[in-house]
Image (tube, rainbow, N blue to C red; front, side):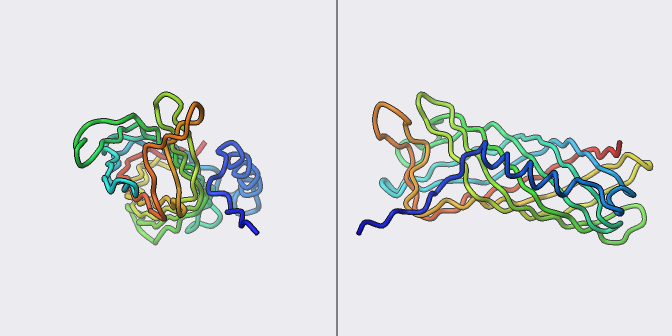
Length: 219
């Protein structure tokens, strides 16, 4: 009897719908949430790291480092804890290794969408914190017929919050992302007109580090 493999990817629109449902539950203000209010942090940052190894050729393909931006929504639960929705975006390039070392193969959009939380440590003028999230990474290559795919991912970070006024502050953070690529995964494949794939991986992990700075507003 032929074994049917479990689905390796999650449609991005289905993931967004699930996040919306979870967020609607989290952001319904209870007693603590209503007391503290929503915090909004647009940010800009710089992302480094990320590579794939093509199992069929052994070539290493590098995700170029560069600028990124996004938005973080926090709903305080207590003075020390936060519920958090994190969205990050960057447009980058994938460059080949080996024979094609340094050559740009295609452009790639990377979206991160995570639901998690943060814990603030006591402080006077500077508030250190740690944050973590769980969610999805959406890879959208630019190229004729190349498939978009969504994978499970985790994030962990830490930084400081610097209050400027009662409703405005500065947020400085470093955050690492781990995107899990299932076994025998073919990514960046042509969706029609053939079965060509640019990269074939086997149980790999895409790791990226984000350094970011943002301004936090509390409406």
